[in-house]
Amino acid sequence: MPSKSTPTAILPVILAGGGGTRLWPLSRGHYPKQFLALGGNDSLLQQTLTRLDGAPALNASPPIVVCNEEHRFLVAEQARLSGVALASIMLEPTGRNTAPALSAAAAMAMQGGADPLLLMMPSDHLIADRAAFQAAVEAAARLAAQGQVLTFGIVPTRAETGYGYIELGAALAGEQHPPTHLVKAFKEKPDADTALRYIDGGGYLWNAGIFMVRASVWLAMAERLCPAIAAAAKRATAAGRQDGDFFRLDADAFAASPSDSIDYAVMEPLSVEGGVRVVALDAGWADVGSWSNLWEVSAHDTHGNVTRGDVCAIDSQDNLVFAEHRLVATLGCADLVVVETADAVLVADKRKTQDVKHVVEWLTRQNREERLTHRRVYRPWGSYEGIDVGTRFQVKHIVVNPGASLSLQMHHHRAEHWIVVSGTARVTKGEEVFLLAENESTYIPLGVKHRLENPGVIPLDLIEVQSGSYLGEDDIVRFEDRYNRVG
Image 1 (tube, rainbow, N blue to C red):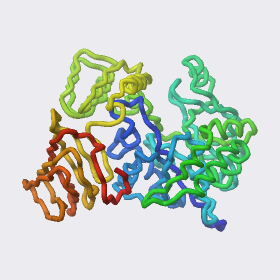
Image 2 (cartoon, one colour):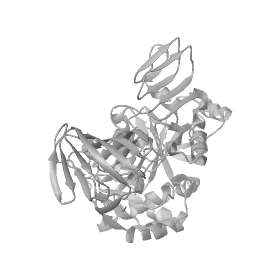
Image 3 (cartoon, rainbow, N blue to C red):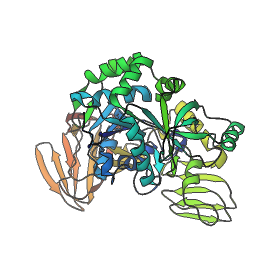
Image 4 (cartoon, rainbow, N blue to C red):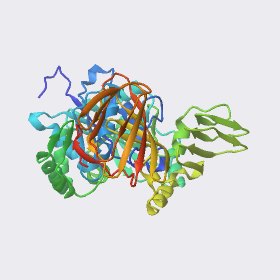
């Protein structure tokens, strides 16, 4: 145990497994909203990773990030770009909601006899006032170090139907800054009349879904209130294995866990016992759960519009218009959301943006790729974007990060022609290994083993022209791969 003069370490546990379907077409299954820069230059995940920076008194440890297999390289790359060292990237073999994820992180945190304070944060929130957030965390840490269970409640600014609420019980004795209360009850997302009653009557905060608790206390509560979840999470962690930068939970053990949220599995039954405290958080918080939420928290022009990209707005008020690839013009429009990407355009009534998920459901029923991927597809080594496609040919723009390498591979059904646009490429073609500079090219015949690497310090940009009878991404036979992918 730490001495009285040393604050107990705070271990951030960041849950990064969400899908963000209500922010389609920017947020998609393979590149969801937590990886998007929606409130500044950094992504929501990157903002979460650095939320405790500049506060040495908090004694924060490198975070654990919990995500799924598909997003593991995105997490690693965004942490690298932010200069954040991670304690672990824990991979969920299957989605089981937040209670099993936090239980597995707690079990990992206690390995070696440690018992830190877990600060569980979703990866997709905006918090404008970092200092106010850190002050709330410091207040919560004092109580969590004594074995208390803390949640954070947002001081509401309106009668919101898209958030759950926390009903406040008695204020804790003594001066608490920010104010801290017992939790009387957790409330589901209300209808409009109920939300208005909550706000008018006072005594309610929005439920932020952020929690702080000592690791041993969480596991003890989970063992008592949801024993099947606790047991499965502990087994999955004990039988898990390290795979490079990633920790893989045991698939069979984790799949045996019931699926449940932190609120339902532990917090709600514990609040009935009077065992949860809530710290009031007034820090410019937003759960960017829909386009209307993003409009509310973004900077508006004099006509109430929020725009990004090449936008012409004439006689238009209170719209959100995002243009990624071309000019988007609005004329005589009000209260609309217009989002343009390379392969899809969304036009929606701003009041209906909670229902964008129905568009994604339609895309799923139609088996459309637009529900999962953008035209730009991210890989652990960089990205590629389709430029043109036709009968027996396909053209891609490929970007390879500095120091990165594609697998040593070959294709049964296609040949490839590579043209370097900028940077330097190291090419393996059969038994040959050679460098290509800007404006140089090479041809990779069908069936020949090959590899593309970037030995330089700037991104490698090249154009790839594929030709053949079949051009699907599954026509890859991998012989060596630094990212341990199978193909």
